[in-house]
Image 1 (cartoon, rainbow, N blue to C red):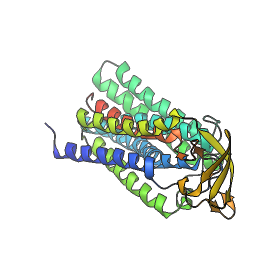
Image 2 (image 1 turned 180 degrees about the vertical axis):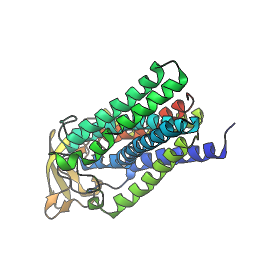
Image 3 (image 1 turned 90 degrees about the vertical axis):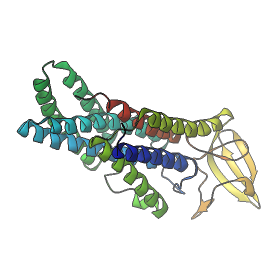
Image 4 (image 1 turned 90 degrees about the horizontal axis):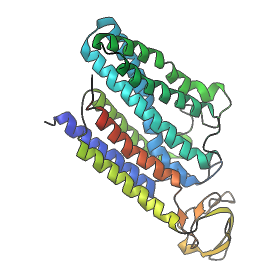
Length: 317
């Protein structure tokens, strides 16, 4: 029977995926970015909360692992186990979503960036935890070995945090990028972060998102991804440059020159300090802005992460 915690977790899950979906289609994004399509920055509303939740899960698995090794009480192992499962699922979500985003913002999906590599290592290490736990038949020994392994796997968490600061990196250093993107983005991200971390806290505390709610969350995410994907059923061009000729926007694109009435270009401002904000965007033949596909990937990941935690919560100890 569902508890109050379960109902609260369900509400948070639906709120998080719904907010992620709205942000994917209509959320604010920076006018100018160093490289690529600035609509891809709508991925931030999923990628950053899930990445933060992954790191926090790893920390909690470490702490509960130490407590379990000291006290040998099953309730601490249950907290450790849920934390480690969350760390595995969410670090994979962080890696896949970040890799999709990097395809445009870094110019390559996989570039050997130290943050990207360290998140991949973290995902692998916490996935191995699941194997370690199942590889020992004796329950007490399995819990002790798993707890010890979780404390060792935690070494990947600080590496993820400091890697962009100590090695040449494309990924910004921890805590340096969000405020620079502007207050509307930062405030919406705060809400998304609060929802994701609250849901994580309830999951680790033992709350369950019922499967119907988890599948509904995935369906919402898939619907948003389908809306974005439908934009790619027509030719899509990359904008290399743009100028304004009266009430006509002239775009130099990968598909040739497009002349589009100003009223039909749904992007404002069009210029910042003389630089066209259209550069790097994807556009349809009629000049409509196309949301970058990486945003759809990240929204799908939000729904998939909720489903993964829902399923994993039903296979404990």
